[in-house]
Image 1 (cartoon, helix red, strand yellow):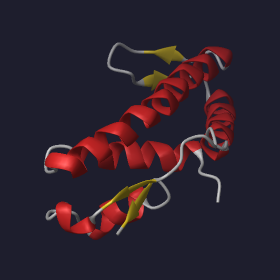
Image 2 (tube, rainbow, N blue to C red):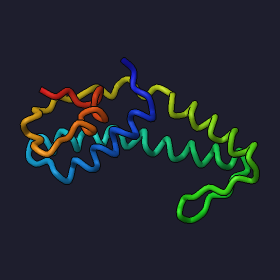
Image 3 (spheres, rainbow, N blue to C red):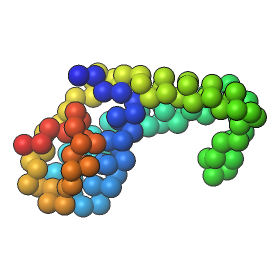
Image 4 (cartoon, helix red, strand yellow):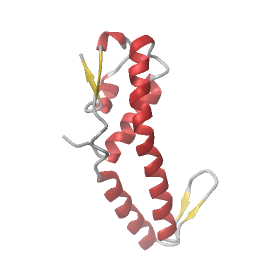
Length: 120
């Protein structure tokens, strides 16, 4: 099943949290997947900035968006949803990790990584 940008962003966030808990071979495997997903995260950020500019939105230093009106905000959100629904590069194949090498993993992290990490 193809993965979407939104799913990749959620997985990236989970990998960032888990990287603080993983050690050894599992940590290296998680790091490799995180590197693969960084391209999706960068692309998403660039595209969101482009969409903000397209809709006349001001981007604050802290990343907050100031929309000129409700119509611009609605159009931005619609375009952003389409961006989230885009499929990611099919070359990002799942990697295998022994689940017992991740003693602190929780259900939300397993769900977030489903499709990117194959737990054994």
